[in-house]
Amino acid sequence: MKMRRHTQPTEDSGIDLTPMLDVVFIMLIFFIVTTTFVREAGINVNRPSAQTAERMDEQTILVAISSENEIYIDGRQVGINGLRAEIERLKGQSPDATVVVQADKEAGAGIMVQVMDQARLAGARNVSVAAEVP
Image (tube, rainbow, N blue to C red; front, top):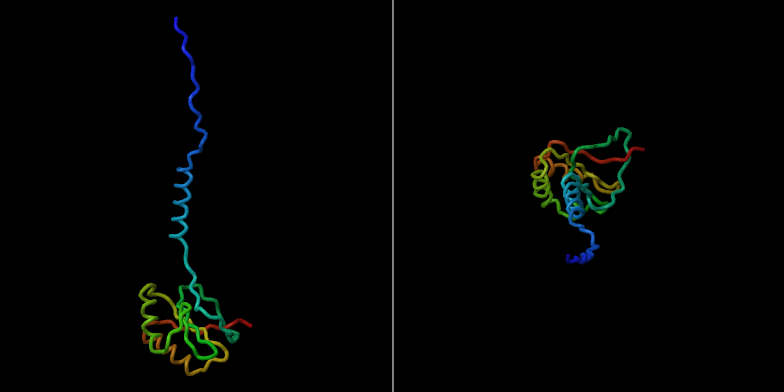
């Protein structure tokens, strides 16, 4: 009778990370799809206070007016002439969005009225002015 020699198989001590990577990528895709992105006006505005100020939870298009009467949307400065087209573009992405004007305390009332007028001409049904609760 011939004796068989039992040979040890070569040790492959590496861990297969493929299933873990698949799970991580699936979770990443899930979080990207379910995340809502917060849009900011792009500048810090010193808002006036109001007793009747309310918090808005809907989708909003933020238009900021600085103390130097400069108009900003999404961190970009736009002129009064380009404001209407920019709001129309953003309304195309979310048709039910409310336009909120964040005017600085030092901003002129005339520029705020022009911004609100351009927002209404762009098709915004709801145009609000942002204020701080005292």
